[in-house]
Image (cartoon, rainbow, N blue to C red; front, side, top):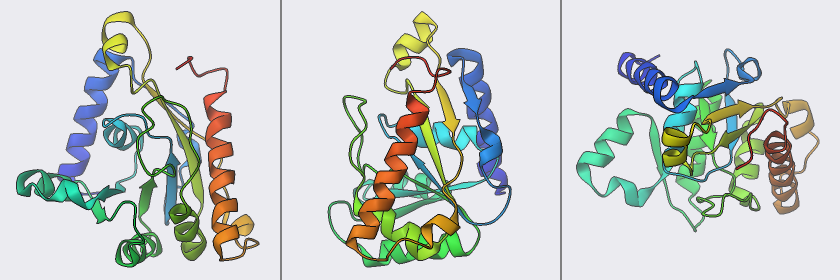
Amino acid sequence: MNTCYDLCRRIIDFVLRVFLRFKKCGLEHVPEKGGAIIASNHAAYIDPPLLGAASSRELYFLAKKELFRNKLFGWLINKFNAVPISRGAFDRKGLQRSVQLLEEGKVLVLFPEGTRSKSGRLMEARPGIGKIALEAGVPIVPAYIQNSRKLIQALFKGKEIGVTFGSPIEPAWLGRIPKNKDGYRLVGQEIMKRIGLLKESPEIEST
């Protein structure tokens, strides 16, 4: 793991646990080695650091190209493994880079909904995650981020911030899905169903 990445991950984890009652569950579901996708809900800008702090493996992230326009911020997120991709358009290069990272044995974080849910409700998955998953054929670990939209409440009212990882969708299941639009949609639906089950878990505080 990159030394700078690991140091920052540990610092963020410590701060979150001290001030925000940060909780991590289901870490055993994240493969210890080899390529994997972590597919998570997305409700706040802090979600990528939360996932990074929760995982003991180094993570890679897709980030919209607009974030790289500011040279300083672009340099910073690049240091923390952000990969630029065009949002709202078919970005062949970005998708190819995503598959390449997974084939190299990296763990790639994807937000299936494609954007933040301002209400916190789960939305439909975009087809891109299905395409990447079927091309790479790696395990997909569903994840649910709890209360990231409520940082102020978490700080002053004792609400938990947490990340829960679920059982992976295995490559054997993906291998039975056709590599077409219907297949991409089916994979996205299965991912969002798994994230929804994590959200409804009795261990999760209501968001």
